[in-house]
Amino acid sequence: MNTQLWTPFIKVLQHEVVPALGCTEPVSVALAAAIGAARLSAPTQCITVNVSPNLMKNGMGVGIPGTGMVGLPIAAALGAIAGNPNAGLEVLEAITPHDVEQAKQLVDAQAVSMTVAPVNHILYAKVTVSDGDNNVAVTIADAHTHVISIEENGLTMYQAPVTSESCETSAMLNVTAIMSDAKAQDIDEFARHAPLADIEFIEQAQQLNDALSKEGLQGDYGLQIGATLQRNIDRGLLSNDLLTQVLMRTSAASDARMDGAMKAAMSNSGSGNQGIAATMPVVATAQFINATREQTLRALVLTNLMAIYIKAQQHKLSALCGATTAGMGATAGITYLLGGDYQQVSYAVSSMIGDVAGVICDGAKTACAMKVSSSAGAALKAALMAIDNQFVSGQEGIVANNVDDSIANLSALANGSMMQTDVQILDIMVSKSV
Image 1 (cartoon, rainbow, N blue to C red):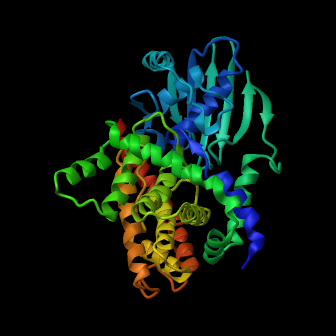
Image 2 (image 1 turned 30 degrees about the vertical axis):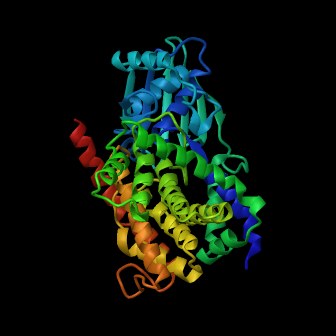
Image 3 (image 1 turned 180 degrees about the vertical axis):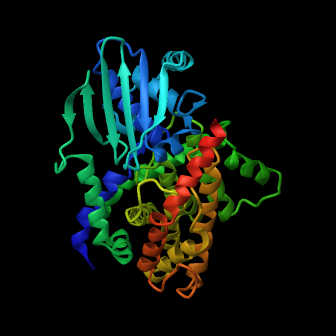
């Protein structure tokens, strides 16, 4: 048992599993705008936003919390007017209806302009705010809260040090390094045997995403996938079994988040939907089988850390749907809750790769709840197969005989040929919006 990885694993979980209010791509734009506006001496009059193609893709059609609107322009305007520059991914936590009205007026006055930046960064946003006399440009890159530069009236006031131990890029690279030293079995052993007191913080993931799920069931959000399933339970068309609960509770949380609910999600690897897809199938399963608190917490550690392990081998944003990789973490947690051992956990993850590999990401939007629910269903199916020792074998497709090799093969697909897929997806989406 490699206990030397346990302390780094805890640090990774605390770094990668954090609250986020709203979709993290437009939130990063709002954060840059808030940081810039805080340096102006008068209210913001105009905003220019330059983003990478991947950030544009994930910001075009997603709901912005508290606004009833979608897209990056309203996120930038709201961040500049009322964003908390010190709140990270919860930058929009304290907005009011009056703030929203002011932000809408900026957008309606065409004071917010958007362009796609020809940059190599997968995740990149440069937001320039102006009060008419002065302007401040804030650039975020590589991670959603990582500010790499601040310029005031053309003068560089801050430049992120390349090798600083405290900067976000270094922390992000350390996550990759830690996970590159790990194997899936190390993660499984940690989740099963780490002192409970060391991992109790993961309970907040259950609390936040469970509350978001309940909000999605009660409110009129998105495609109402969760609410639709509940209505059909009431009609007698669906049974209130484990599969329906997993689908309903997971998709309801995504419904609410993607349509701008004013409740934070617990994210995973920089994505709220990935946090939901990893967490809620496990929470729903734990509640259905009446798992103990300790069993639930250990399952949540396993699911979140496994999801991070898989995502750490892939580009931050890509054409591969992150809900599916997060669901691969969820199937590990479900298998554990159903009494599965490590071998069965590895079977479940490999079966997920054999099932949903290649599901595309065509931007953040309300329809993401469909993919989240599909991933949740696949996670439960793979777990149920695994505890009966049924699984996709290494003789089939990109799945290998070893789960770590299967994950590496999936990541090679995401980082290789799917890069061109990403370009094609963005071309289609931009053509539609013209």
